[in-house]
Image (tube, rainbow, N blue to C red; front, side, top):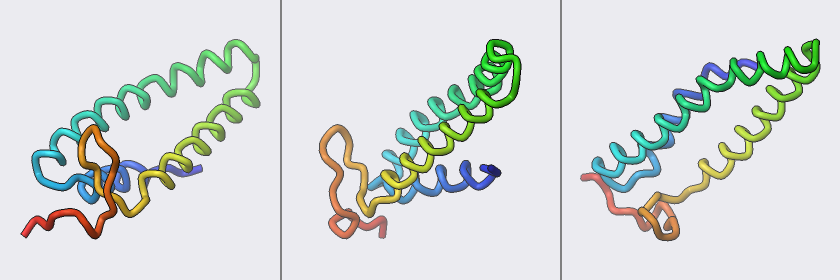
Length: 99
C-alpha cells in the first residue's frame, strides 16, 4: 500500500501533459492545490471512520477504495495526450515541441 512514488509521478505527468511552460505552471497550481487539500482531509476522514465503526476494517477498506480511484485516475492521466485548455485533449504527437 505504499504510495510514496505518487507525488513524483503526479508532478511528472503535469510536465508531460502541458503544451508549454505557462500551462505547466497553471496546471501545477490547480493540481497541487486540489491534491494537498485531499491529502489533508485523508487522516481526518480515516479517523472519523475509525470512530464511527469502532475498528480498522472500514477505514482500511476506504483506504483501499481510494487506491482504486487513484489507479483509475492514473490510467486516465497516463494516456498519450496533451492538455490544451478547456477543449478536448489532443494526441501527444500533435503537440508543439518546446524547442
